[in-house]
Length: 216
Image (cartoon, rainbow, N blue to C red; front, side, top):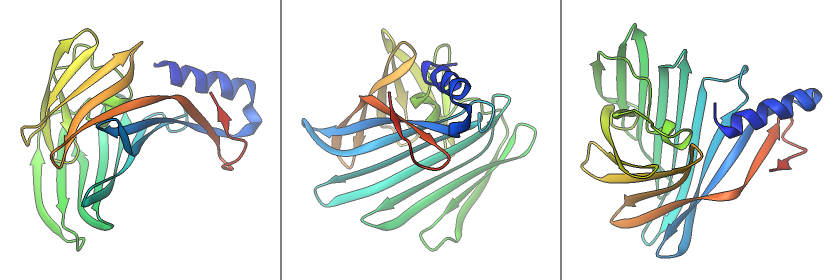
């Protein structure tokens, strides 16, 4: 359990009537020292939606703007379903859905912009960790994670002290760095641009009524 989960539990115990439902961790997306977007990592209260994980991102660089979200649902440490969606210049570009339809067996559907299924494939192995997970916890002793977008596994290699290099199915690499088990920074590439995704020092606790927001 990471520090944010512990904070949520304490907040829930101290203020049980406030209806606290989640904490949001913010990251700035930087290119050449300039902020071009943001990433939100949603931490749900353990015991209510403990297995749910979701990240949302938006960005704008020359001739290219877009948004992305990825949502996972885990039960007992095993991925049950996931959905990712990419939008570019205001239009849906692609969507991928992964669903466990039998023990350690998944169906993956790749959708085009018109919501028709472009391709479907099946995989037969247990998925315990995803790319989304990398924003939630340090991948200690993990050698591969599942790409919800590509429907494939990605290799994870330790590249330094609390730093890990992930090789995506398209050959690109991203580097994730951690402090006290929390993701602090990500180096990635998008449309030929080198990105730095840097964690802000301020997070947000939300309640079910979307009011009384508490900054940590």
